[in-house]
Image (tube, rainbow, N blue to C red; front, side, top):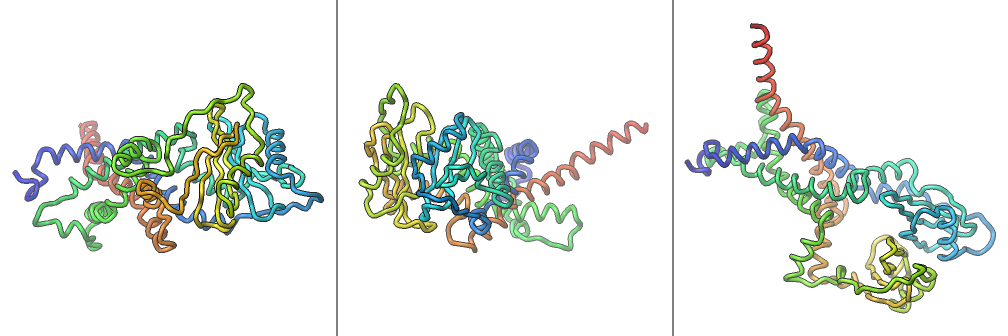
Length: 379
């Protein structure tokens, strides 16, 4: 019997159907949550910028600078490690500081003159978006949630591939599986919707599944791509000794080293070592403080001040471009608002497919079994 002509009668197609069905029922709720949260986050940056408040210090005196702010943040949160400091063009504007402790992260604003804590960066809309992002990326569980997300991406990929196999209705009927007939009864309409939407969104779902796996488990992807393309962004860093006291140099010294390596640019983000055994600081440099634009990443030894690497993102290698497109395709952050609108709409497809697939399972299997049990009990 030919799969091309009569796929329903081919045994391995029935096997794929069972894999698709039980995988969907097993991880469907996870896919539903990830689908809705991902669609809600497509325009996150635009919404965040529109709602973001940037208070300006009313204190008298000169700004504390990077070192004074770092000291103030460490004094306020001695159990946390400072991972990022965001620099703004206006030196009196509230400074964004990222603090981390195990899986916990705090993004706070500090007064640049007094060093006083002003509160969390995000309030209201921004806080809701941050919570959604943490749900979508980390499942509210830090690095462990990210790993679970990678496994979930694998299941989503499996769902898409098995769905593509069982979608094929045969040579005579394939055209009708591409369209929806609204005049059909609701059970048939639900089937048509599941089939047609599954087909037209297959490429999107596959991309989201594969890139979801990449974000959690990047090394195998980088190793494979590295067999035919070079990387600038992911060059291995040499080992460096960590001093016995583990004290890093003043932030101003690290920023000055980055300035010497990339003159004519401004430092927008200062990343400090996130682990005791990690000696590397990352200083992101741009042509101006405006949103977007080319970046240079300067890797500096936080204990010696030696510049280890300068990454010029204005001239990415082939490997960098490929991995950059993993991010573009997952989040839809290329092509402006029209592309993001399409990603938002299609991002709802996995949630709908879970609901329509569950309804088909209820109609075809579960409801029949429940009716049969009622008949048995009545006898």
